[in-house]
Length: 506
Image (cartoon, rainbow, N blue to C red; front, side, top):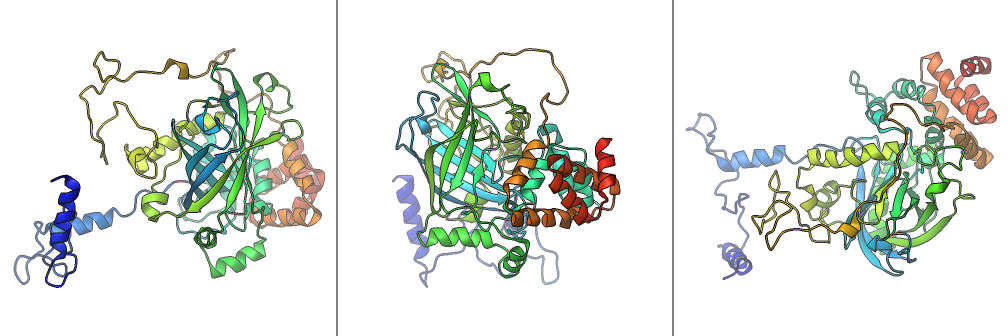
């Protein structure tokens, strides 16, 4: 009798009780005789350690919550399918782009970045837009945001940035005095701050926002040649945002409005969809800009690096269990496949380690074998054991190389691409910072009413800052981005413009 038949037989046997109900069991399947009373040493004696049912219930209850994500803690997800609309086989050997019409299953998780699990989904925050492609050559993750840029350009500042934005370790309150103090030392942050305090900082729903890979990556061809690429998701539902007043009204009636909207859309069969666009930049053109194209605080101007559509994503199935699928889903920029490699972007380089290491801590060393993270491609390596191990080792050759018949072999044609190196080791900022121009361009692209909302949103937080030097510095960044922008922000937070000009001059 095979194991499946045996399991079904036992289930049938246990279901045939006197009342036909299924028995309550412990995790090992043993039936429970009393789930109402602990086992004690007599009428008034202490509870016995040998009450294994009690111990197991408490153990499992204590562990119902895994460590919360440090960032992107509040989120929701769904399954779907990506269909390629272009054959990119000439510029990348990635299977997902190997033929027009090729379909790849996906799981997508949307999230807010800074706020904790259970927080209102309508709070002003960047929105995570993470996509896991289950390709035939392994899982590929695009771990991005709704905004196309980020606050910082070097991963060494990421813990500091998050610490400043999170609640104070003393008061447990989020405090503009803390994060603006940090950002006053980070002039490149003004581009992201300008976008975040615009209407884009409060999307109406996950379905009505765009997504971006933020970083530059490399598309690598079969011959090892490569181009730099940026990925962009464009909502087919259109981009819709909320004003502060609309946020307050919606938040009071449904603090989980974004999850409600996504589940309602998919539940009704109105499947949300996004088109994937890419921008391609040849390595020889990296120095053709006044900024560094590998700087995550910058966008690539479309008039100089046009976007081209390469596929469409449709979300059409909800998770069966939130914890097992959405909460245990693990995305990492290091989940790459042949034909797609990281660029030298300093922020991305740090994320390659940080995200994978976070999942090792949060979910354990075997998180990739969980159903939501499990690759569609077979996995063969010498990794073994550790917490949560459920794999069955089929060979005692758990090392490589080997002369054994079942030894694992490399595929030399999939070696990483080669890039030239020059100079010396260093610790200094990039040469082309150009911190303010794109923030100004974004501001000027808004209509007059949107500019007014941006300034009002920004002033609502910046106005709470007590340190005059910090306030003047942040306004100075806005002033250097655009004269009108800076002047209006200065007026809104009550900082004399001459003070700002003096601080800017210094």
